[in-house]
Length: 133
Image 1 (cartoon, rainbow, N blue to C red):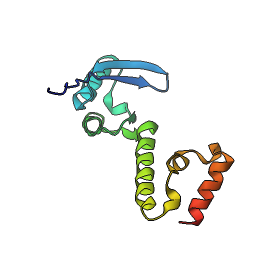
Image 2 (image 1 turned 60 degrees about the horizontal axis):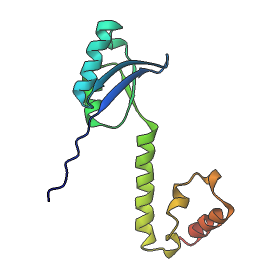
Image 3 (image 1 turned 90 degrees about the vertical axis):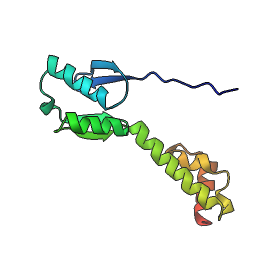
Image 4 (image 1 turned 30 degrees about the vertical axis):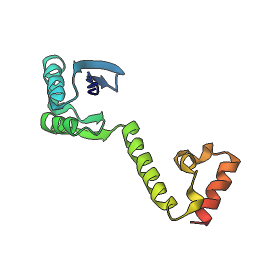
């Protein structure tokens, strides 16, 4: 039996964060999506040259579309995707280190948790794993 192919339907939403207002919605998530926004923006609001900031995920297509359509815009990556990459990197290092240090076993969630949210028991465990590292 052949596995079912999942087809994704993407919608991109463009928001003016200064006004907390959606200004463009279109299907897709590629560089053409950025071009679609540029065309709509210039037809209704003004000049692409005056757009100075974009916040988006780390999609190479979005980055390429922004760079080619909005020459004066800086790109800021959204917090969710940045934190996801950081958490994956921390977990990868923990996995590699636990092979050499048994004290790190079963500490995954302690390392991914904000220090101020740790329980007293977790703080002691974290301190112990740091000392024994």
